[in-house]
Length: 315
Image (tube, rainbow, N blue to C red; front, side):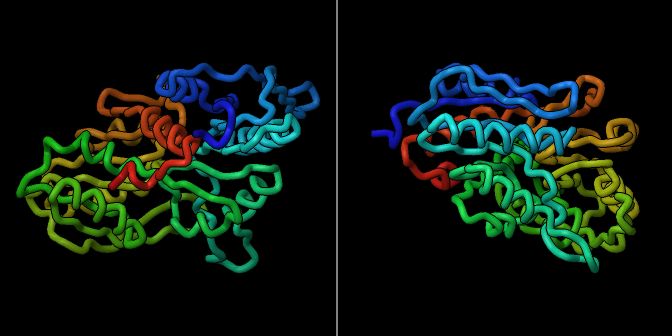
């Protein structure tokens, strides 16, 4: 028996389409709610149906505008708790501030931990997320965290390319685990690009490459693409080392600034991402494939609601 009488899915304004697709998978409809700003820039949230004792899942990726969507999520959690929800799960397909997970400079904040504290204090009972920038972010929470991964979905998209002349490329040493997991599914070797970030202005320089890519089809993998600097630096390094065709697989398509234009004009043959954040028509191009994660999130929600194993989905 489920731990609560019923399951309710509520969506913020960040990614309504994804929430609706999740509900289609679950065979339910979105709970009625409203969230908007007053003229004084204060956010107002109201849940417009009874959720007393219900198992509530609030879908809200922390996409642009990040701070507005974060505040809206916190208020929705608080509203659900004050409406006597039985349990509240924050479904955050993209967890913003994930890059600030440690003190890498003097006198800086660990914002990833701060956001975790916000969610706990607001009243979230658990968090469901996708491909955190760093796995240790789970340890910032004192509530259960289920981290899903889009690696199998993205690997499946490029399965037809896999062969003896195929290599999976990590954009830095820290991303080697993601590359290794992808390579295992594609039965391919890996290569690692050593990069260094220049200051705090999203400038990246590829320093060296570990592994062989000459004459091979390369698949660059990363957890997110922001300005595109890391992907383009990796592309340049691969070209310099004699790689053939270059593809790219990224979970979170943030595509900030001129990223779409820069990637469109690159030599990357094809790029696949998932819809963890909304990707507007203006930021898409013909070689970009956006794959739905509604089934993945929907099944995880179903398993959490029924007290079943989420990890078993990937075994």
